[in-house]
Length: 299
Image 1 (cartoon, rainbow, N blue to C red):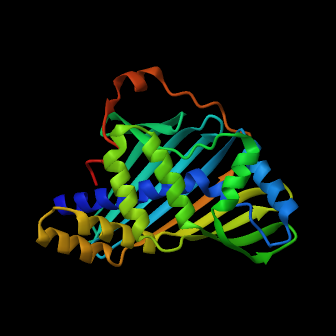
Image 2: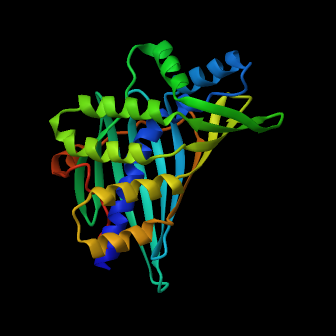
């Protein structure tokens, strides 16, 4: 079980750092359609930028030869400044069909170019500081920056009510943006920058599928397969680690064929209740480095 917990920590860390960068830029990428649809592109992007709040149901599924982990997150999100209220459900089944479940509460708030998270697990609150890609310069700057992130976008299908699109991100631009934010975040991010550099250097292309409501010009659904990203990222980190060779070989075998998928459904646009982080949560949270994945003791 100790090995499983360590393995779980590694994969959750990689998924967390990937999703932190990915979530910060997804709506910028989500507006691209066919080449001649520039007016539509701007309409959709500006619509997403104008949102005050929304709800997201996010499911992350992780499968390895040793375990299957599912993380379901029901999240209310305020846009400017960014503030989250997350209710997470962890479930894990090992190769012997033994299963455990755990619930985690979380708040997050944007402070300049950082996200401060407060996570409740095992009856205690933990505070972590995470990077956040925060664009400055107004909507025109955000549109220009978002467009740079796109390497390719195609309309997979279209009906009277929606477009289904496949978008491929430009990882070089995403890396430049992420590393710039990390380096601006202070000396405490030196270790985090090293991990991020390792991950981005190992990545191939990241593509995802978007559903866009043509009536409201909003992104309603996103699906992405992070399997290749996770496999390459974990292996790259392990190659640079100093853990014993035997354990390193076990982890490489475990994550060399890991399957990781994420499914997001967006709803309740501008209908979310105001998010307030309780003062007692802020006062009682114990600070922990961002590179330490928070895993419930039952996992």
